[in-house]
Every structure is written in C-alpha cells, then in structure tokens.
Image (cartoon, rainbow, N blue to C red; front, side, top):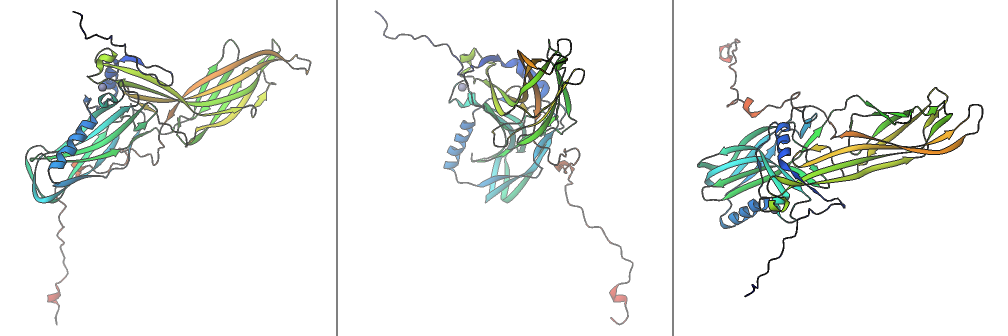
Length: 429
Ligand SMILES: [Zn+2]
C-alpha cells in the first residue's frame, strides 16, 4: 500500500542577499582566535535571547507586589577610549547602583550588575529569530549580594568601577549591524521577585590628531606620480583639506604632455558583518562555528571638479597642483571606524580619480593637438574616522578616585591645641 505521507526535498539554504550582494559562509573559529588576541580582557561569549529574559521578568512582576527599585548613577566622564585599539589604555566607568527598599525589610537572594555588549545583526541567518539576530557578551559582572541577605527599608548604595578595555569596539549603528553596551542590574528576593534596571552606556573611540601624512602613488607605464597630503584622522560632520601634486606630466622626448581634465573625490564607508547562526539554525549554514559574512559599501560624499588647479609645463617634468576640501557631511548617516573581528567592521576610504588627456605640443610651435589618448588615475587612501577628541584627556592623565582608594570612614576632626587664656581667666568676668 503506498504511503500517503510524501517527503519533500529540503531546499538548499541560500543566505539572503543585500543590495544584490549575496553573503558568504565563513568559519567563525578563525575569527575567534583573532578576537582572543586582540581583546585583552574579553569576557566569555554567550549567545542567548534578550527577549526571553524580558518576558520572564514581566511574568514574575505581575504576581508579587513591587518591594523596591534599582537605579544606576554614572559618576565617571563619558566612556572614550583614546588611541587605536592596540594602543588605547581604555576608559574608566564608575558610579553607584542605588537600591530603594519600600517595605520594612526585604531579604535578597542575589543582587548583581553586568556590563554587557549587544551586537545586533541586521542580516540574521533566520529572519525573526532573536538568537540569530542578537549576540550578548558579558564583559564584567559585579556581585553585590551572593547569598540570602536582609536589606532594610530605605536607600542603599553599591559603588562600582570598571576599566573598559582599550580594544573595546565603539558603540555603532551601521547599515549592517549595531553594537551597543548596557549596564543591567538585577536583584532577586527570596520570594522570587525580580528587580531590574537597564541603562545604555555609550562607548566611543577617539584617535588624537597627529602630523599630516604624505602618500605617493605612481602610474606605470607613464611617468606620472601623485603626492597627496592628508590628515591623519578625520571626523564625521567636518571638512579636511587635501593637497595634491601631480608630477611627470611632460614627456620631452615624445613632445607630449598630460593635461588634467577632470578630478573627482568620494568617501566610501565599507561595512562588513559576520552573522552567526544560533544552535537551532546552525544546520542551515553547515553546522556550528560558522557564520554568514555580508559586505556593503556606501558613498558618503562626492564632488567633481573641471577646473581649479594650476598646471606648470615649463619645468623639466612639469607638474599640476590642486588643493580641495573633502569631508563627511553631518546630515549623512554614517559610523565611526570600528573593528570587532567576530561581528561588525567599518572602515573609510578616500577615493580620488583624475582623468588626464595626452596632448602633442611640438617644441617650436604653439599649436597643441590632443593625441586622443586618455587615462583614469585612481587612488585609494584609508582614512581613520573617529569621534572628536573633545578635551582629549585619558583616564591615566586625569584619574578620578576609584572606590578602592576611598577609606572606610571619613577623616576625623583634628584636635586643635590653643595656648591663649580661657575667657574665664580674664578678670571681671
Ligand atoms: Zn536562530
């Protein structure tokens, strides 16, 4: 008897494309080893659902009356890691966790707070799956109450401090993924009531401006060479000057010269994300320890010039000098540089294109005729794009007191020894 149940072939999984570019399946293991070397103080990685913890909280709170609340007060300056991920000494995060207890006394089972990073991909392996979309990493955990402990009515403070490692990727929101940081406090009473508080902490990176850099590009088989003077660091929402010098434009032997016809520049933002699959969906991309890599390039700003340069054909090789202003406008949605090997990577390039046309100019004649030959000279420069330095003071240079440094009790009054006679010793009083 033929079976009524027919088996359908499982379609081969294809990662959905972005801007017409399909994702490629990559091994996460190679990135894992890279991460462990670059991230000095990285915590353990855990993939878990953000939604599931939230829903358990609301169900618990609905059955028991609220016996208190939690609140975080940040006392340190904004978290800015100065310098490159390898050089930065990190940034201090310190403050106070306030616990308000409403009844006369509440017995707490645990009270802890976690500083965590949440990487959310906008290209998950399975759309709608929370575990495929969000990766939460606990960077540091403070355990304030670890066993049953009675807390009396009133306001209680728990100081905390943490040195955010210098390699920590900055808070980012790109076209492919977001990186965010949270302080998540959680207290559990012996009756199972859960108090929670969640606050986002913005982490940024700032590389201090150094000397301008000179970059040389050559264009064989011609004798043309271009030298560009560029700033070491650029900022979003700001302009920067570019000085360009094109040399070797005159070829005396052939009685020809290159004339600059058009110059264009553009700033590209290149984003790359590796979307890991959760345990449930790992089989779709060939097992655990793999992820799908997506890349996207976005042009943030561009400009075209047809004049404005100075040509000098009288020197031995001849030269063209051109200065222009480039920049990323403030109204364009863009992200600072970020390098999170296991997640999101964003970098910026300045692309300069010059169109030069060859002209024939005989020595004793003023008649110049185009030879019909033209070239596109294309140059690409990596630009460090970071947050502005602001005051530019690292925690090492101006260190706020850490709670370890504060003594247990306030200093006592000094006994003042007074040699002057007492009022009672004066005659007549
Ligand atoms: Zn999944």
